[in-house]
Image (cartoon, rainbow, N blue to C red):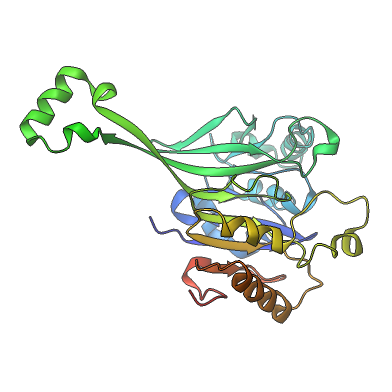
Length: 293
């Protein structure tokens, strides 16, 4: 499946990613509506990673322009009190937005957005110091029923007869494919977390691990630095990588040279794309990978 992914992600300022074919939005930072314009009407499901302002400030205008009965559905971490408050304010400010569905979710939830597609919430430690489930990552997973191997070589008529007699539950096995993974804001916590992702969208706020204190100070939430992301990817079965959420302190040249340096160090031979600070990435996967793969 080919995906048209448009996004913006600059640390401290704004993050959002729109997957056109799935009518799906991850996060809703500032500038969302100015970039998507009428295309924002296609969004049916919004999954917010956490309540930091750079991930939610686009919600009010998005909601004001697109709310209708039953849509959009906005999913958010269940222990974050910011979202019920935002919903209440939104209704008072724009009374017509009552059609929007605000839905708290936890890592136990699998949310179906299509018959064969669901979103799985994954907890992360970005906002762990506040307690509860306040920050989430997400996976887009496709399910298909695959005929059991012992039946595949039988004649078609026999297969149909056996399925009718035994039922699909006894003749097929469910196969799950991780189409897209979205980290949200989080450090690398588990080297196998994104294993078998066809597309991984991951934050890489800092180019080096000693940059964090200089940039955000001791009161910042936890973020990733580029090398730990690339090291994780090198040991995982990932087909395409999109890096974002870089600090605006870095130039294009600094980001690209560091990505290339780490691709060589960790022998990464998959396409690596990036969303540069201050720039909207349009149809990201149709662009030219930094490493030329």
